[in-house]
Length: 303
Image (cartoon, rainbow, N blue to C red):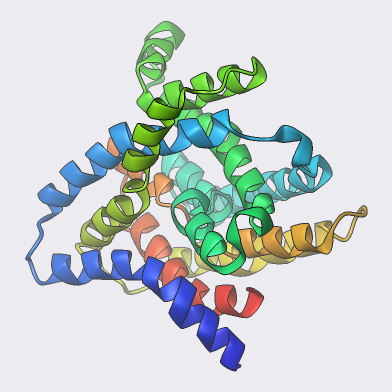
């Protein structure tokens, strides 16, 4: 119990505090939702690409346990499909809202929340499994949801217009450029990496702070949909990942840290995509709030 409290107070709460601070200042009307939207846009368009490119450019793919990543991805597909069916047909949510709610159960706030926590607890070497999941979610999962959500939200725009919008998305550009340079063996020059590291360090705290302010304008009372999606996120997804990782043989550290990743809160990007495409956020917002709060205990226990 003492070890759990030590991890909670030293490594997890300081990261969570940025979102909590934004929430409190938003409720107190010190920072407005409009201010937070500008901060969120700056973080998304400039700071997150600066964070993503060096991460992907410097990845050592040979150190990854690809079977573990594959099992994690398979669990994402299963839980996403289950959540979408439940939200769309049992809870009668609109198609795009159900899509983003299902995204919230499997797209964990890994890059901006679990990654800094894991580095504080385990250090850079021990957090390699978390880095692998960050790389998977950043290069594949996130890109998939950006593209599919855009296509679903603009069915009459045509593939060409959608592709044109996507090619101007700084996050997708950073992901693609990072993958290409990594595979080509082209390391970014040291001065560029220094500048990107300097800017990217602000991505997590600024995004979490802005998210807290934006979420402060939403009611916290959970309804049936909020409870169902939060339960699938906090219980079903990590339980399935835990069971799946018993298949195969790999260092125990990989199993432990990937389960830690799966137990994290719902990612903020489902909320950001909902705002971008005009999808209602009265359910997505409480899901992020509740999973962020309730995951404090599970993350401290697992870590």
